[in-house]
Length: 104
Image 1: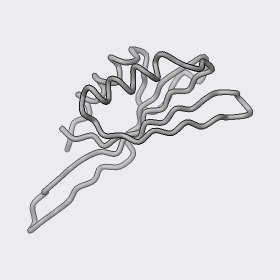
Image 2: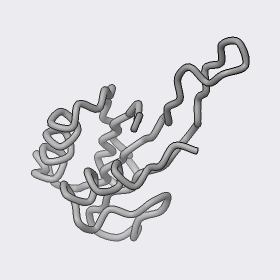
Image 3: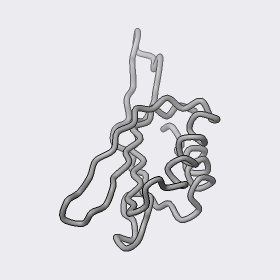
């Protein structure tokens, strides 16, 4: 199976406190969640394999330097991603979502 350790290193370089799956739920925090392992087959062989991984930054700071650090880390590593931001009216958090394609 495709290892996510190199990806974890990239994310924790941008935010040393980033956690897999669940954050602290207090203050500003970053999570990264493997969503789906994709395998493309041809003639009984795996032709391509990659993870879809979401990196989410929950923050009350705008602009948040950690968001910029995550974006820079992903771009520097050559990891393709889409980006969106959402606002939670109840908590007043901004949720920055980087949806990544991770290959080794």
